[in-house]
Image (cartoon, rainbow over all chains, first blue to last red; front, side, top):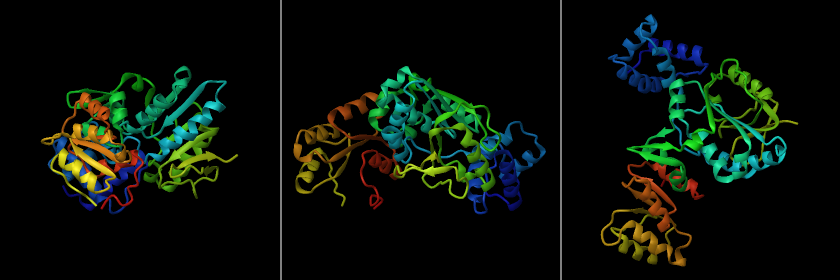
Length: 273
Length: 101
């Protein structure tokens, strides 16, 4: 399905206004494939027809569907692997020591998308740190999209999804199969509290975090929004906490309060002392 | 380099002739099936560094467990893509920088 220049601009402004996500020139293909799909499932023959309905606001929930279609992304379990190794080998061991008196750990996964990332973190914890079973773990996973959060809560994954990045050993240990779908086991699901958060707006109250995963999210925002988000993280992250960004992301030129750690390829940052 | 074998027995001959780092093993092969092949290879210390991934249309959890028990390092359910293989290789700590060839 093709998109006209004016329809593209309309959708681009809508997405910018609602989610602060920037669709550059050249992203027409993305709008064509993803909004084309929405147009089809919602019974519009063309993207043009869909945009007409958007303009008239005649179709309940259509705006949200369009925004969700353009802001959710393909992912895999243990994506890029290195951040999860750093979590296991360095981050959690250090926090175990630093928090041994309080015995509590706060974790925020800030763009949980279809759930692979928060559940990967949960598996790292369950698999390697049985001592944490006795700790109070506050694990928040958030996303802008309610549809995606509901998917996360259901813990349901397709065969293709469990094929991606998940070791066979973890698959048999933490998943159950029902028909053609795979469900994450309840004990993992119950570790996580799923909550809707729009990162481009002012953040709701969150406890001070020991670990924040905010990978491959900032890339979608304009510079001002990136700065504002990072600035909010300064007060949310514990002074000795850890922030994970995507491998291709950086705080350089955005916020000087953070410094990159030496953990290889894991995009792991801490607040400067 | 990529070698092909039509069944488990032929695959056993292949790994005796060539040093194989990674074997993608189909469960359903005539004469000697994938699981028997993996079990056989795992009993021979000569091949202790060889990685084996079961690639199959079998998708029951019990099948995944059986493959792991036989000694498979990983398990891929068909259909699969190149990315899926690369992600599994990364899990096994294998260098994938040349693997796209």
